[in-house]
Every structure is written in C-alpha cells, then in structure tokens.
Image 1 (cartoon, helix red, strand yellow):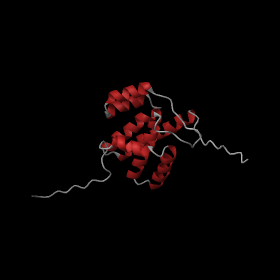
Image 2: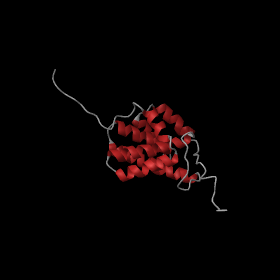
Image 3: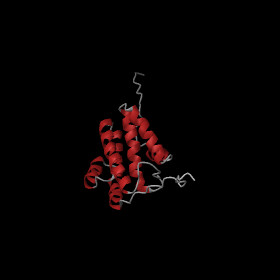
Image 4: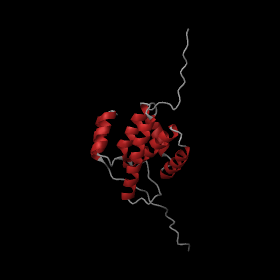
Length: 158
C-alpha cells in the first residue's frame, strides 16, 4: 500500500449568490450598474469578472486587469472558504463557480493585453487545471460581445 488517496482531489462547489445573480440579470451589462452591484457585494467574483469584460470591451485594458484581479482574489477567498486547498477541480457545470472561472479568464486575457506573459502562462494552467472546459464555455458565451485582440483598419479613397 502506498497510502495515496486514489480518489483524487474533490471538486469545489461555491455557494449560490441569488441576490447578486438577480441584480446582474437586471443590469443588462451596464457598467455603472455593475459597479454599484460590486460596491454592495464586493465578495462576488462574478460581478468583478463582468466589470472586467465591460472595461475590456471599452478598450480599457488596465481597468479590465484591475477588475479581473479583484475578482480573482475574491474568488480565491471563496474557494478557500469552501474547502479548496490550492488545487483540484472547480467545475464550470456548477453555476456559482463561474464567477471565479470567468475572473481567471478575464485576468488572463487582460494580462495578455498588457504583455504579462508569465502571468498568462500561470493563469492558463490554473484555468485548465480548475476545469479544462471552462475557457471554451466562456469563449462561446462571450462570442461577439468582446472585441478582437487586434483590428486592422484600411482607409483609402475610391
């Protein structure tokens, strides 16, 4: 016998935030409204991730990075309170986990936008280890909502 736990690390499932979810649903993506929700519920990594997305869409990479960083740290706090020990699955399929996963994704995206390549690598591994399907789900959910990372504009005369 090796004494190893053959069952692996258990999943971490965060608690529901029904009031936050209801307010976000009524916010219709409005940046100022999301800011008010964050002020009332600063523990919610989901609202910080949505603020990061909003800032990114507006072209403010630094604000996006800052909002995502707050969501990331609030998410780590929530994960630890739920028994997470620094590793193990955080399944996208459990809806309350999506805030921390979206914050990880938003932080990775903003880090890439400002050239923080070491952080991008670390966050890519963290997100993949938490749930290998999360990035794909986030990209599918936000397709068309976020600007491309690079745009080419051709101007000329006819």
